[in-house]
Amino acid sequence: MKEKHYQSILNQLVSNISKKKYIYGAVFYISSGNGNIELISASGNMKEDSQYYIASINKLFVSSIILNLYTQNKINLHDKISKYLSEEIVQGLHIYKGRDYSYDLTITHLLSHTSGLPGYLIDKQANGKIAMAELEAGID
Image (tube, rainbow, N blue to C red; front, side, top):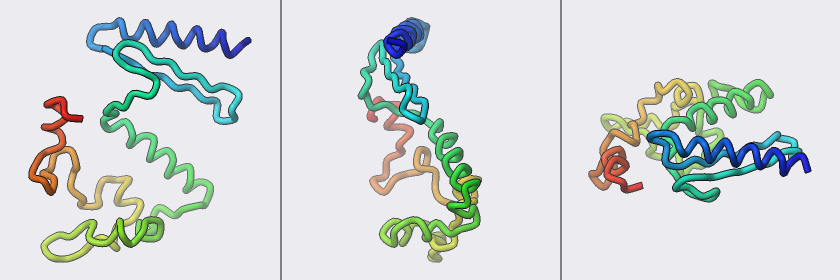
Protein backbone atom coordinates (compact mmCIF):
# COMPACT_ATOMS: atom_id res chain seq x y z
CA MET A 1 0.00 0.00 0.00
CA LYS A 2 2.86 2.37 0.83
CA GLU A 3 4.45 1.76 -2.57
CA LYS A 4 1.23 2.78 -4.36
CA HIS A 5 1.24 6.01 -2.37
CA TYR A 6 4.88 6.68 -3.31
CA GLN A 7 4.13 5.86 -6.94
CA SER A 8 1.26 8.35 -6.96
CA ILE A 9 3.48 11.09 -5.52
CA LEU A 10 6.23 10.34 -8.06
CA ASN A 11 3.73 10.37 -10.94
CA GLN A 12 2.48 13.81 -9.87
CA LEU A 13 6.02 15.21 -9.54
CA VAL A 14 7.08 13.92 -12.94
CA SER A 15 3.90 15.18 -14.56
CA ASN A 16 4.47 18.66 -13.09
CA ILE A 17 8.07 18.73 -14.34
CA SER A 18 7.13 18.19 -17.97
CA LYS A 19 4.70 21.12 -17.79
CA LYS A 20 7.57 23.56 -17.26
CA LYS A 21 8.97 25.68 -20.06
CA TYR A 22 11.59 23.87 -22.18
CA ILE A 23 11.04 20.52 -20.48
CA TYR A 24 9.11 18.33 -22.87
CA GLY A 25 9.41 15.00 -21.13
CA ALA A 26 10.88 13.29 -18.11
CA VAL A 27 11.63 9.82 -16.80
CA PHE A 28 12.45 9.19 -13.14
CA TYR A 29 13.56 5.90 -11.64
CA ILE A 30 13.95 5.45 -7.90
CA SER A 31 15.49 2.44 -6.25
CA SER A 32 16.44 1.92 -2.63
CA GLY A 33 19.28 -0.43 -3.61
CA ASN A 34 18.01 -3.18 -1.33
CA GLY A 35 14.85 -3.76 -3.38
CA ASN A 36 12.43 -2.28 -0.85
CA ILE A 37 11.50 0.60 -3.14
CA GLU A 38 11.52 0.52 -6.91
CA LEU A 39 9.48 3.12 -8.74
CA ILE A 40 9.47 4.50 -12.28
CA SER A 41 7.42 7.25 -13.86
CA ALA A 42 7.38 9.05 -17.21
CA SER A 43 5.53 12.03 -18.64
CA GLY A 44 5.39 14.37 -21.59
CA ASN A 45 6.93 12.99 -24.78
CA MET A 46 8.76 10.20 -22.97
CA LYS A 47 7.86 6.68 -21.95
CA GLU A 48 9.40 4.56 -19.22
CA ASP A 49 11.51 2.68 -21.76
CA SER A 50 12.37 5.65 -24.01
CA GLN A 51 15.96 6.04 -25.12
CA TYR A 52 17.39 9.51 -24.74
CA TYR A 53 20.66 11.38 -24.81
CA ILE A 54 21.97 11.99 -21.28
CA ALA A 55 24.91 14.25 -22.21
CA SER A 56 27.78 14.20 -19.74
CA ILE A 57 25.79 13.26 -16.65
CA ASN A 58 27.06 9.70 -17.05
CA LYS A 59 30.55 10.93 -16.00
CA LEU A 60 29.23 11.46 -12.47
CA PHE A 61 27.79 7.97 -12.26
CA VAL A 62 30.85 6.26 -13.74
CA SER A 63 33.21 8.20 -11.47
CA SER A 64 31.11 7.30 -8.44
CA ILE A 65 31.10 3.61 -9.36
CA ILE A 66 34.87 3.60 -9.99
CA LEU A 67 35.62 5.35 -6.70
CA ASN A 68 33.32 2.97 -4.86
CA LEU A 69 35.22 0.01 -6.34
CA TYR A 70 38.46 1.69 -5.28
CA THR A 71 37.28 2.11 -1.66
CA GLN A 72 36.36 -1.59 -1.65
CA ASN A 73 39.92 -2.42 -2.80
CA LYS A 74 38.56 -4.07 -5.96
CA ILE A 75 40.57 -1.82 -8.28
CA ASN A 76 43.59 0.47 -8.13
CA LEU A 77 43.28 3.85 -9.81
CA HIS A 78 46.77 3.43 -11.27
CA ASP A 79 45.92 0.10 -12.91
CA LYS A 80 46.21 -0.06 -16.68
CA ILE A 81 42.83 -0.29 -18.37
CA SER A 82 44.14 -3.34 -20.23
CA LYS A 83 43.83 -5.22 -16.92
CA TYR A 84 40.03 -4.88 -17.15
CA LEU A 85 39.28 -4.58 -20.86
CA SER A 86 39.69 -7.19 -23.56
CA GLU A 87 42.55 -7.13 -26.05
CA GLU A 88 39.98 -6.45 -28.77
CA ILE A 89 38.91 -3.20 -27.10
CA VAL A 90 42.36 -1.95 -26.04
CA GLN A 91 44.39 -2.75 -29.16
CA GLY A 92 44.81 0.38 -31.29
CA LEU A 93 42.59 2.46 -28.99
CA HIS A 94 45.05 5.35 -28.74
CA ILE A 95 47.58 5.76 -31.52
CA TYR A 96 49.25 9.14 -31.74
CA LYS A 97 51.90 10.05 -34.32
CA GLY A 98 52.42 6.39 -35.12
CA ARG A 99 52.94 5.25 -31.52
CA ASP A 100 50.40 3.08 -29.72
CA TYR A 101 49.70 4.43 -26.23
CA SER A 102 46.73 2.12 -25.66
CA TYR A 103 48.50 -0.08 -23.11
CA ASP A 104 49.79 2.92 -21.12
CA LEU A 105 46.31 4.23 -20.27
CA THR A 106 45.28 4.00 -16.62
CA ILE A 107 41.98 4.38 -14.81
CA THR A 108 43.27 7.72 -13.47
CA HIS A 109 43.87 8.92 -17.03
CA LEU A 110 40.26 8.17 -17.94
CA LEU A 111 38.78 9.68 -14.77
CA SER A 112 40.81 12.88 -15.06
CA HIS A 113 40.36 13.21 -18.84
CA THR A 114 44.13 13.11 -19.38
CA SER A 115 44.26 9.99 -21.56
CA GLY A 116 44.71 11.85 -24.83
CA LEU A 117 41.77 9.97 -26.34
CA PRO A 118 39.71 12.11 -28.73
CA GLY A 119 36.42 13.62 -27.60
CA TYR A 120 33.80 11.51 -29.29
CA LEU A 121 31.20 14.26 -29.50
CA ILE A 122 33.31 17.02 -31.04
CA ASP A 123 36.02 15.22 -33.03
CA LYS A 124 35.42 13.72 -36.46
CA GLN A 125 34.43 10.08 -36.44
CA ALA A 126 35.79 7.47 -38.85
CA ASN A 127 32.87 8.25 -41.17
CA GLY A 128 33.94 11.93 -41.28
CA LYS A 129 30.90 13.14 -39.34
CA ILE A 130 30.83 14.94 -35.99
CA ALA A 131 28.51 13.35 -33.43
CA MET A 132 27.51 16.68 -31.86
CA ALA A 133 26.41 18.04 -35.24
CA GLU A 134 24.29 14.93 -35.76
CA LEU A 135 22.72 15.30 -32.30
CA GLU A 136 21.94 18.95 -32.96
CA ALA A 137 20.34 17.94 -36.26
CA GLY A 138 18.09 15.51 -34.41
CA ILE A 139 19.98 12.38 -35.48
CA ASP A 140 20.23 10.46 -32.23
